[in-house]
Length: 400
Length: 232
Ligand SMILES: Nc1ncnc2c1ncn2[C@@H]1O[C@H](COP(=O)(O)OP(=O)(O)OP(=O)(O)O)[C@@H](O)[C@H]1O
Ligand SMILES: [Mg+2]
Figure (cartoon, each protein chain N blue to C red):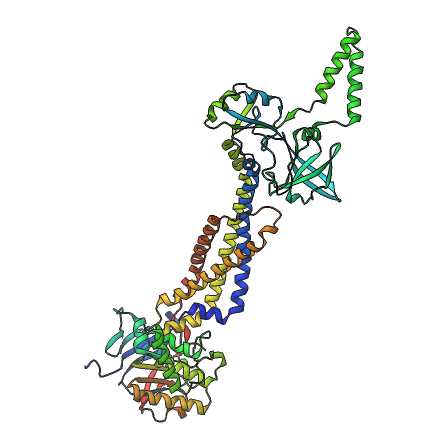
């Protein structure tokens, strides 16, 4: 006969309530693990979508995600000439927050060269961008419909297609436009600013007596061209030809001295270790605290339920029950409570994780580890109760 | 002395509670023997040491001096540590019945009896049929699945008796088994114990302070201030 289950059945309401409470706690622990995995998945989503071999970024930076990186777009021509390079695609990244229907609307805008890599990883509705201007592909998470328009910078952009679940490393949904559009949105000044700039340059040049009018005009054209140029990108992603040597290509590019060629592995390490490390430690700390709280709660519950059962335990000893009968009763209750609470927590997260604002990724390994930890906690927590039970004297069964 | 001659032998049993100036001599120099099948009552006023005597015999309470032998095996002696498992002794040789019935509240009547059998290594089905048999013989066949809280005082006490008898112990120790019962139920319980002493050939030691309950007992010990002052 299983005494643990008999006791639980007799106090079913209490047992279920405590298990649910504990289950909620374990649900939070599970979700925190999921949030951490989600952070990694989010951080690496753009990386994975690009399938690049090398990320060429500004010298001495760990861009373009962890640090800002600006390089001239036209370096792509030079990179394409490096032996072993199959493709070099300039990309522009920017986080945009605008007001939409009275609410802040935040997303991550990627500009890419049409017909080259770096664009949307998949199109789930509508179509890819076909025109060089004013078309946009948005992640489903942005909640925009095909045909909707959004005003950015100086122009309206029309949603022509939807892509899947891609997000930026900070979890914002991603939208794609052509590189030229992205550069316009990022760098193009409005007409007033352009007019002001031109007037100021003209006035400054006019004060230089030694310039002939022809020279002045030539200079002004050149200066305004530079100030109005938008041909800057954040990175150029490189795909290698089959059989090309990654290190050789990296070596070639770094010899130019102005750029840093980060391999995909290095970029992954920067994102995973650098950007997520703090979040990982934070979440890890919370998980440990919550597990300690769970352990304390389980200990207390088991201890008080042992105190409640002193008379029963004394009676069992009186009729000659072996210690293992008593230890098993306490340990089984503790384990059962832990396992049921784990089940409740898991179920809770399973039913709700898609509704979390940030991505939750449930890794079987994490879940199995947590299960093992919960079982261990239950065993350790029942120790105080068991120790109490073993010191109970059979004589304690006597008193009224 | 023949090993099987006595179920209980008590020799110069003394129990002193406490230390220093606040010691209480609960039992002083008790010496007696009980044969298998004998029904013995211990009568005495409150505080006279009846429970102490019973618990010392029942291996619950280590005596200060003296010797206790159960079914030929020494279970307590001065400066002596048992060379065997006292729990096993309790399981196999002793049955306890108390004033408060001491049933396990989360087990039904039948389970309360079965638990004593199962810890004594009976299979579940054996335990079940023996429990049903016992409870039915105690007129509880219709209350098998009730929890103790749903049993009357007399019913609960009969379940406790069934549990005490479950493993056919050589010695049954009952401490005021009728105290919580009305006279009629009390008399029924006593009659039952008497019947069992005869049928199972068990030695039964019953503590009581109610003179009306002891008719038909083989022997009656009078206890006062820790001493057995008389036997009738
Ligand atoms: N654990 C203990 N520690 C100290 N003194 C005790 C202890 N148990 C009993 N005593 C004392 O020993 C004496 C005998 O107690 P005991 O319980 O054996 O009496 P009793 O005859 O069973 O009384 P009652 O009829 O009230 O149950 C009493 O004076 C009691 O106060
Ligand atoms: Mg007493």
